[in-house]
Length: 318
Ligand SMILES: NC(=O)c1ccc[n+]([C@@H]2O[C@H](COP(=O)([O-])OP(=O)(O)OC[C@H]3O[C@@H](n4cnc5c(N)ncnc54)[C@H](OP(=O)(O)O)[C@@H]3O)[C@@H](O)[C@H]2O)c1
Image (cartoon, rainbow, N blue to C red; front, side, top):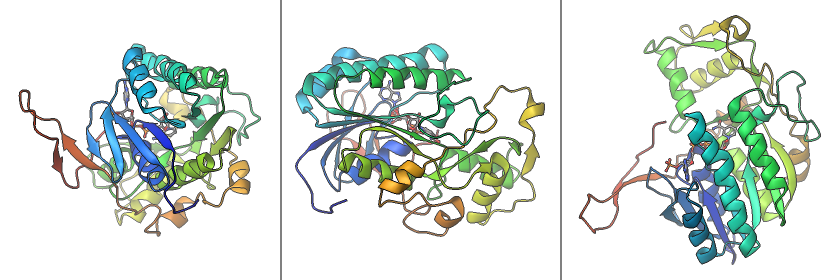
């Protein structure tokens, strides 16, 4: 990827999110980036931030047709109440696709390994999705909407994303369990191919830079159980591991894919950016320990027309 700033406008949805902030930050080293947030105003160096609810088609259309991006990188997501989840994941993506088509933008969608049922790992890009969770089903429906887009598209499927500085919410939960603040069990019989969020953002930006289209899996090179991942993250942060309790998905009664490990060799063959293993990245300042670029901003009080207030070092806790 060239370090020289280029002409070209990129819209990143979900730029206040865990992955989106890194994508916006890294993309802004190359292009002019407009990032969107929904409920958590943030500042990201060299990125212009604006509020957007992707469930509001006229707001989406106004923003996209005014900014006229060459590339739309859609990372925004909501996971929670099912009806709202459908609005954000499926309908929000469709609104963005419609508006992006009007300006002829290259459309990039961030999906997930949870489009797979977990029974046939490792999954290459040729594998047929068969999601078993509502989240996975909605992401697969959104993927299919993206595939029907009339212009160029890129769909990436990361696995679990991790970061240490500061710990992402999942890693924070591992720490809380390690220090006895919460009771949690980590499944020894559920497998993923976790990756560092900074690596996934870097590979995504390189794919966009190369105008790669199609489908790419962006999982890490290590297949790990949730328990082994928890132990590695706790160790990386110097936390004790004796309180981390193993558990069994099989006995939990939960319906969850057993093993959605991704084969990401297609991306590895093409790209200069590397997807480091959890072991490698834990020791690297520019991977697992790279400081979060986001500064949290607070909306002005009602009636106060002043600028956004900035809280240094702030981080959203979800
Ligand atoms: N995290 C993982 O381990 C993981 C694994 C595989 C795939 N993925 C995929 O990676 C992408 C990013 O995930 P993430 O974990 O970074 O998500 P996240 O941290 O939960 O961030 C979600 C983002 O979406 C925004 N958003 C929520 N509702 C919105 C709406 N109605 N309109 C516009 N924006 C809205 C949020 O804005 P505010 O915060 O400002 O409200 C936030 O910026 C998603 O597509 C997800 O499916 C994530």
